Length: 493
Image (tube, rainbow, N blue to C red; front, side):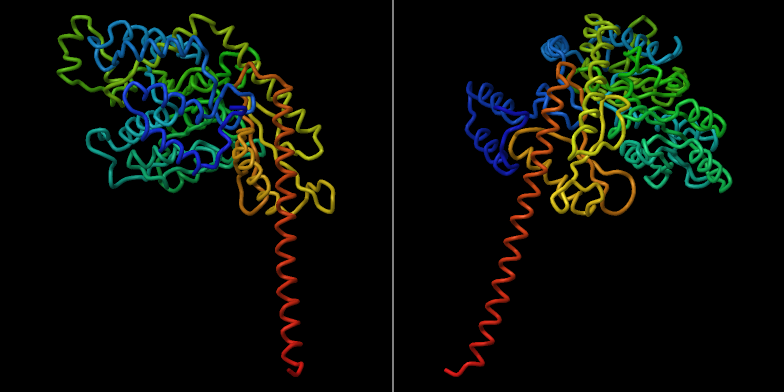
């Protein structure tokens, strides 16, 4: 195909997909639609595909995932997944140890960070709000009276925290955004102030959600300070380490997550810095007893006498009933490469990010936002003013060109670059993002990607100049016509 995405407008690709879908019939359907899917997919193994937390899966993980699809075990009862039930239990114990939890930990495989964060806040609601109200919230619902529940998380946290609060009946407005620094780390002073104001107002701090690896910058919140403040106010402490959890595989980066072992619950995603096919999320709790409100018994899946006879069930650990054995590919990968082998892949991606940031600093038309923490960084293209790069150029124009150059790269099928906005108000906040999860890419690949960004930015400036010239010409033509018309009216026939 010649690039990480097809060189088509969205509408053109949609029309092609519709035609192929309509034409695919019988034994032709599989090869025809598989070819279509391959052509029309963003290729995370292409070094110029670097927008999102979208990894190229390891071959061994893909093979393991194929085995799961063919055998089709379902994790909701032992008699549907005898071996997979035990394998998931062993895997989760190993991952709990990686986080720093003890033998009393528990957990489950999830569809990703969104589901894991929902589970963390659900247990927080049930434990903290239940303790304060003297009610079983999971049975009786959120109390209509009493102190208002509050959840505290940074202004740079994942949107799934608000979504979870809405789904749990707390309401999105229950989430208090806490101030951040330039690197988008939660400010402990701001958190302490927000918790105190909450307590002084008679409200109930239900949970503090820290982020270990923000989506945009990979920043890790100060976990020990967050844990201390959560404990001081009796709040549940949840760490969203969906991205940053991969740092635990690296001796170099693992210290960034010091304090994660203090969390009541943790989210991890192995389909990010774990190189697994989606979905490969993990949810862990430090103490299995806190899982009590999720316990469920269905007599056709996990009857009590079966469990007493030694047939275990994972049903009460998950929000889902039917559930793939998604932990199998993680288990195979861990046994194949080990922590050390996976850690080398993490370090390779971190090295790529450091090299990319250095290349941005060296480029006269690019501007770095901050040095990378994990494997992602933000930057922008700097438009010209009066023929030279101007870092103080019109901020609205800079936003417009950066947003447009990204779409140009997509339209031409050349590169997939992320786009985000810095916190705050007003123009000048649009930034481009590279999220480097391909351990087989090279610094030269990243430099090539950055040069493609600069070329696209220059092309957008030229297109803007042409359009401005055309508009000016049309305006001049209209004014000339008006003047000529006036003279014609004045002149006698």
